[in-house]
Image (tube, rainbow, N blue to C red; front, side, top):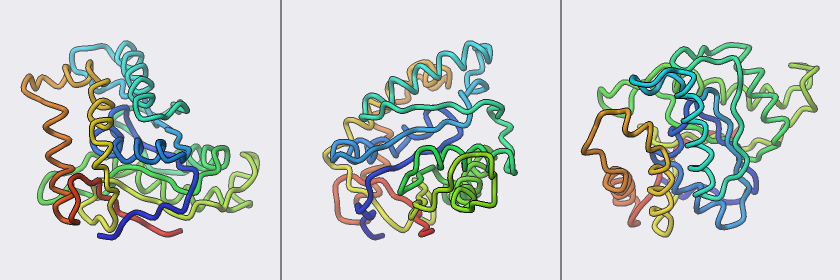
Length: 234
């Protein structure tokens, strides 16, 4: 893997659910915001189907608040949530591509970021449909946003996205050294307390989980802690 390019100033993170960014990427986000880069979050859903013992409306309220608090830990103030997409049932298609293209035109990022959209996390650990569908839509919407003849009533075209990158992909090509920011990543994940409690895993340790995965990625590239990304040039 090669170091993640740093010659950019604005990024838009697009994911399906609250907590998606915090299971790995938040440490890299902390590094970027600390260095002065602008990072914004766009959530496709509020994760309303994510806590088995809590009704969807209440879950959505709780998880939105947790995501906003989690973002602040790593220096992100802009957190938006789309309407009209259902947690667990996100569909790849023109409606989602349109919503993402509109957001990209509004935020005008150099980089769009999401999480692994491949079929697995490596081996036989199958990835869920929401993550897969959002990843493909992010790639397509970055190009849709640049085409002035698509979604002509939805903002001025933006052709400035140069990179689309997906964290924790089994086909990762680049990495971010987060040796000085792993604690911020852990603190960001801890803000999802209700969600973590709802998993029913009493022994889950955010610090141990994130350090272990970041240490393994770091060992492969010669640093203490790293976040891997699959990068596409657009």
